[in-house]
Image 1 (tube, one colour):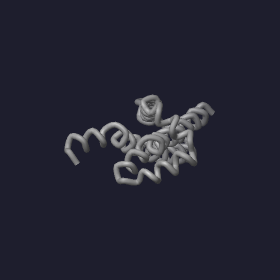
Image 2 (image 1 turned 90 degrees about the vertical axis):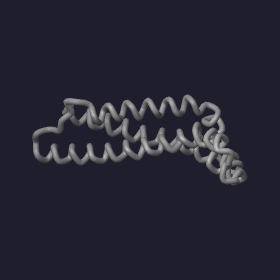
Image 3 (image 1 turned 135 degrees about the vertical axis):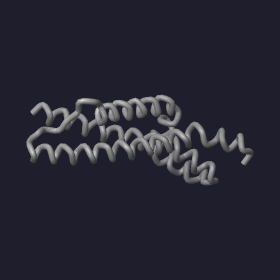
Length: 132
């Protein structure tokens, strides 16, 4: 039974990580990309429809730090040493399937976080440096 609760906790952390990293993309990266592409009116429409995005964007350092911390915790839970599935064939198969899905979710979350970080913190300075 201990394995079920730890698996449930790990699944919850994986999904929370996915949503927080997607949140960094929505709050901070997409508006910057839209403005860089000349779609400022789209950003204005989205922020008027969802004003909480402005608050998230004002605190983007905390949003990125929190989601990055969640990615680290999730990665540690997924890849820590000594982690094993039960020896029962049925439970072992289910456990391995859950681990594969958790790793996929973690990978997608890391990619989303990386895209968001690049757009929020690196894209504009690189564009200015290149003189584009």
